[in-house]
Image 1 (cartoon, rainbow, N blue to C red):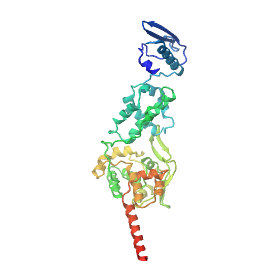
Image 2: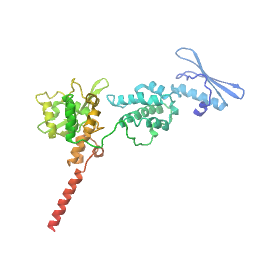
Image 3: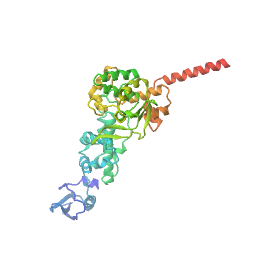
Length: 388
């Protein structure tokens, strides 16, 4: 049917509304046939029509069937991706966290997907077109941005499948891909050590003490930025020498959002000596219900706020760590625990991961564990030789 429609000369690019009676007629014009559909618009009461010129009766009947189908489902089968996305609104965000993830999907759709593919009809979007649109952006956007960009059309076209406008979602046919290195966001291969983090915190503290404290908490608690924002004074337990991370707090749609951590379960992190002075300063003579840390203006310190306030990229580059991200502080803390010989399942609990395999991907361990293993093995061999 679609192939026939592509060969038709369409005189009135309109489709009948849902449920209106259709009047069909044909008229021969030499060797060809004009097929026409007429209806009365239920709102304006005006007569509307759509006609095509085709080669034979079979093509005319296929055109009539297309118009009947359009009338029965009330959606134009020739909609562009842009028109369809606007028609469904936020329906494609069902099941998505409205406080955080939804904004990224909306931005990906509005800023990157629709400018590249919005003018194309739904049924003409192919896997290759999507690939080429994404390929062109791989060198200028982060992997996280690209994931949000791909997720948006995937969800929109899933809705088109449900509306019976396309048979299958071409975005879901994309092969797994290895993203090219982002040339505008160079990444350091080094995980900062505790002394490096202390230097970063000291540099941030020159702008405001809260930024330096945020850096220390993120690294030595191996915590996400939103989790640092969710800490209360009462979450610091000096009797047990642990900090409990049980919520995250960040600006979201409709104001400040507070919800459980990403793994939806509280976790306890031991207080490491370099962090003690920071925590003492943030907890002494303060009510348990107060936020542990807030920025210069009393608001939550987000990763974007820290970046803008400190000139993060230039700051870390000047300290010999070009490309270091704020989230890399969490990776660093996890790696320090692993390099110190803490068992992987304990590190996983500290990070709040459901699987140790996720934790393994997080770590950037050095040769400390191998060196410790060699020392233990050498000691064992010496003891065996002496007892022989």
